[in-house]
Amino acid sequence: MSTSRGTVLISGASIAGPALAYWLHRHGFAVTVVEKASAPRGGGYPIDVRGTAVAVASRMGILSRLQEAHIDSQRLTFLDADGGEVASVRPHALAGSVEGRDLEVARGDLTAILYAVVRDDVEFLFDDSIDSLDQSEHGVDIAFRSGDQRTFDLVVGADGMHSRTRGILFGPETRFHRYLGYCFAVCTMPNILGLSRELMLWNTPGKAAALYATGENDDELHAFLNVHRPEPPLDGLGNRDAQADWIAEAFAGAGWKVPDIIDAMREADDLFSDTVGQIRMPTWSDGRVALVGDAAYAPSFLTGQGSSLALVGAYMLAHSLAANRNHTEAFAAYERDTRAFVAANQALVDHGSAGLFPTTARALEERNTRLRNLVTMPAPPTRPAYAALTLPEPR
Ligand SMILES: Cc1cc2nc3c(=O)[nH]c(=O)nc-3n(C[C@H](O)[C@H](O)[C@H](O)COP(=O)(O)OP(=O)(O)OC[C@H]3O[C@@H](n4cnc5c(N)ncnc54)[C@H](O)[C@@H]3O)c2cc1C
Image 1 (tube, protein in one colour):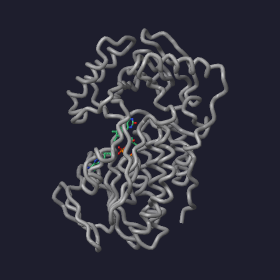
Image 2 (image 1 turned 180 degrees about the horizontal axis):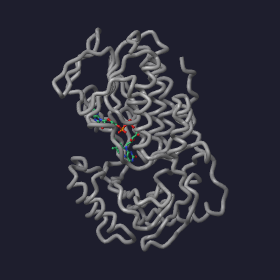
Image 3 (image 1 turned 90 degrees about the horizontal axis):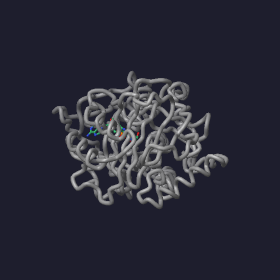
Image 4 (image 1 turned 180 degrees about the vertical axis):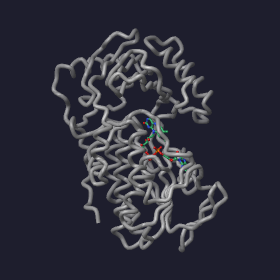
């Protein structure tokens, strides 16, 4: 492993972390990734890789693997309170994705593909995390939770929306969290509808439930529940049992397959539940420590751009570190060259992406009318924000 460019510790081995590790290694840095889980975490709802992020995947040499993992959904059917069909559309028509170029893959597949391309070149420390960090002009002293102590030239937090690295450096999440008015939960469950490569979305005002078959005649469905809550829960969503309880309470009496989904969530070993929100920070670095991906600029699933921002942000941060004389200039260049792209994608929530989850009866009826019209109209153009950054050439 070359150490000519210095040592970097990355916290988090999901999307942003391994992507950054890949590029930093290619630029000659010695990289260590610390992940609190015991292995790269699978699970989660399928995610999109679009626009500029497809170019990053291509430059990493993983495009063909992502294309093989592409879900290629054929149909998205909207249902009313009783489970009756409102409209059925091609999914990419709604998302503004480019059919044949943009990709949708299981989150765990993307994590596994990224891990596979770096695991032999980078040191991974699983089951551990940063306990404290202390930076000076010479480096960053890290005390790990395991008790180990090491010093790195730079540290990057790629530890997600609730980043501990951000918390240590910049203070509580509430300073940067923009709550978007919903809480959601996802898990997998048996394919009780016999669906194949299609998604069904049930709505009543302020509530949504979806069942998504990502494969051809798979035994498994991705279940999703989303509920409007004007104020965020005061102490987060709590532990597993508390999460199952708020879901059951919020959806009590709901029709269609919602009772089955609630039962499945109580039993699931892959329940993932969170508030819907964004992270917006005035700066993404402090001294020798920077943030990337959801830790710095989570856009929320309403934009469908979390993984794409993570991939593009990782590329841009690594490029800036390789192209500049020192980390101060590099972190400034990373922000200067990436911020407009992040802002454009975070702003997607202000331009109707939340329209999939109307909170009033009137808004729901208006949405349904738009959907019925969409069936007879040409697909809307792709969203410019997805490709609003031209990657600098790799160095
Ligand atoms: C298991 C899982 C399921 C998800 N499911 C969904 C979903 O269904 N829908 C959706 O919209 N988004 C989901 N996400 C979030 C989605 O992956 C991100 O929005 C996006 O891909 C950006 O990736 P990221 O690498 O910046 O952050 P994340 O994907 O959130 O990854 C952060 C990583 O850091 C690790 N980590 C956290 N804290 C520490 C710590 N203190 N020390 C060390 N490691 C730490 C986490 O275990 C994780 O591996 C999920 C994330 C995870 C981890």
